[in-house]
Length: 408
Image 1 (cartoon, rainbow, N blue to C red):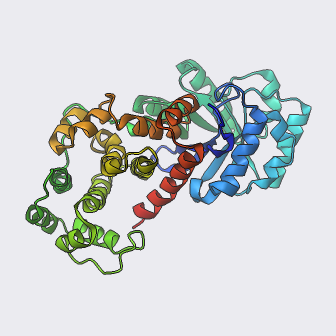
Image 2: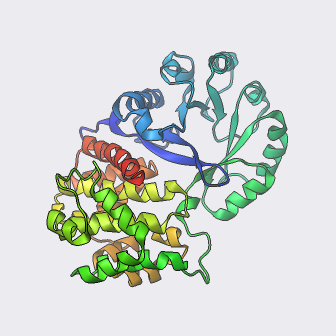
Image 3: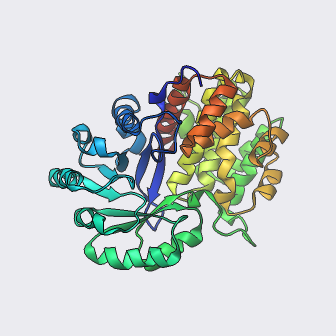
């Protein structure tokens, strides 16, 4: 892609403990030396990742108070680059392509003495890795490329030595359960964005009002009497909605004291957005916070890019597409039935089902950025004719915004 600015991309993938609480994030400029734009030097990618994470995105915006796992090439390990990173919440990931020679081992020993934690990425056991295993804190095992027998043997060998086992590329709850059964304590992957149980699952009674509220908000013409009637049955929904509308995030000059008052101040489309957001977060109050935050990041990212992609009139549709992109995981029910119940527009529904629509390129860009799928990002950025800096800014803003809104 002509004029490609390589230093604007930082993505992140959450790392969970067995209770689905976020332990940290792997920060990604690339996911491996060969898995990125074809002509990128791996050392440059690492240095740009650190530079952007610290000084462009802001590490606190990307990981909050959690650990940041950062891939390191051999050159990066042997330089002073690591010492730019805060040692209290940064984990140095030694890439699987790094040969653990005397210089690398000595550098890692120095990092450990300074208080950094060490992780061995995409680990495959070789005798030459023994010196690194003696100082490492985490062993990351690829659950797609490895077999069950290997995963179990690694756990049996390394857990007694004080190492934490991290299962990466975990795509199902069955994988998580298998890992837990043999002692893995950390999990990285997209299992949490999929329903745990689908067959025979019903919406709990206390969530019915939230779902009804979303159904009403999705109608072409809002019935405010009906909306207020639903809100009166669910005090927490009313309190959260009014708290959000009166928060600094909204920037309204007058205090909002009712839904009808909000309509006067905001207008129908903005009210649909904010009210849907509150109902959605209430629906997922028993789910991992990162699942909801992921949906909010997608929603804000899509909305942010709408104007740059010459789709300003589709901001609400793009926002709703991102927000409802994991509604099946939030409610543990099949997507088809939920979309039908919520009466979303045909185009939003088709986009969520994976069909090609005018909304698809922006939504797919959000998913690609989240997964650090750089080839798809390159293609979609060119298709949408948006700048790389705009995409980077959209992601940064979406991450910050989602955490602010989620905490209200």
